[in-house]
Amino acid sequence: MTVQPLSLFAKPGHASTPLLGANEFGTQFGLLPREKIELMARRKMIQAEGEFESEQFQPASLDLRLGARAYRVRASFLPGKAYSVRERLDALGSAGDEIDIDGNGAVLERGCVYVIPLIEHLNLPDSISAIANPKSSTGRLDIFARLITDKSDMFDRVARGYEGRLCVEVSPRSFSVRVHKGSKLNQIRFRRLNSQQLERTDFSIEDKDLRDRHKNMPLVDHALELRRNGLVLRVGLSAEPIDGVIGYRAQKHADILDVDRAGAYRLVDYWDPVRARPDKRLILDPDEFYILASRERLQIPPDLAAEMVPIDPAMGEFRVHYAGFFDPGFGGGTNSHPCARAVFEVRSHEVPFILEDGQVIGRLVFEKMAEPPQALYGASAASHYQGQGLKLSKHFRTK
Image (tube, rainbow, N blue to C red; front, top):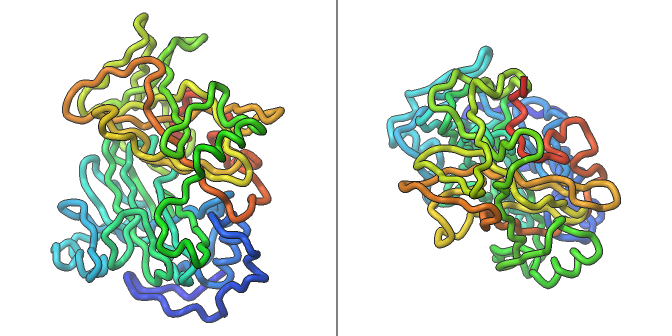
C-alpha cells in the first residue's frame, strides 16, 4: 500500500476514508491482532511515507521504522501537553544538529541521546489508543528506544484519537550502533476501547482468571506464582548442563554494531560469558549490562498478549527488561507445554547487588486480545526467539 510522502514533522491530514465500523472491527475490545492492524493501515488510521513492509506486521503489533534524519540532543525530554516534538527541538537548539541516516546510515554513539522522526504516523479514532516498546533485539543490545508523540508528557503511550507524527528517542548504552532509514527499533500495539474503558489505565487480567487459565493451559512449567495481577518470574542462575553459562555481560569497548545485520557478529567480540558459581549467586557490578534468563519456561495463550513490567524498586537496586512485549503463541510447545524462557536485560544502579538463584526479578502482566491472530508467534522464520533459552539478540552467532 502507498500513501503520499510527508515532509519532516508535517502534520498528516485527516483520514480520507470513513472510520472502521462494527461490521469491520467485530464486537470485541482489547489489543488488536495483525489482521486488524493491517486493516487500520488500509483505512489510513496508520499511514507511512511510502509502502508498508509485510514483515512489519507482527501477531499483535506493528514494527516502526526510522525516518531519514536523526537529531542529537543534550538530554532526554518530553514535549509536554502544550508543545510538539519539533517545537521542543527548536527550543533546545537541536534542530540544527541534524544527522542523515539515509543511504549508508549513520553511527549513534554510546551514551548519547537522539530523537528520530519515524516513517509511520497516526490518525486514530477516539476508540483506539496505543502503547509502544523496544523490540526484543533492541533491548538485548542495551538500546533505550522510547516513543514520543506531540503534546504528551509520557513515553511509549499514544492517547486515543491521536493525530500526528511519531518520533523515537534512541540512546545506545553499551555499544555504538549504526542505523539506517527503515531500521526497526521499536514496535506499537493498538488497543480498542469500549465506552466504559475510555479513561481506564490498567487492562491487566486479574490473578483469579490467570489461575483458571493455568489449569487448562499451563502458563509456566513451575508452580504458578501470581502477584498484583501478574505472573512472577525468577532468575535462573544454576549451572547449565553444557557449559555452565548462565548469562552474558556486555564488553565496555566493542566495535560498532549495525542493527540491520542479523547473524553478522561474533559473540566473543561483544560479550563476556557469566558462568554459574557454586553458591548460585551473581554480583551485579554498578552500571554493567547483563543478559540473564528466567528459571521458568512460559507460554502466552493465543487469545492473550503479555508485557514485562518494571520491577518494584523495593525489590532491588537494578532495572530489568527494556523490551517487554510477548506475542500470542510465544513459548507454545508441543502438547501445550511451555517451552521458552523469558530473557532479562539487567542493569544495576549505583551499588553492587547480589542476585540469588530463583530470586524474583520480573512480573509478566497479561491482557486480552480483541481476537486471536490468525498466525501466532513462532509460525514463521521471523520468530527469532521462539523456544529460546538464554539467548542474545539475533545479531550474534556463537562461532
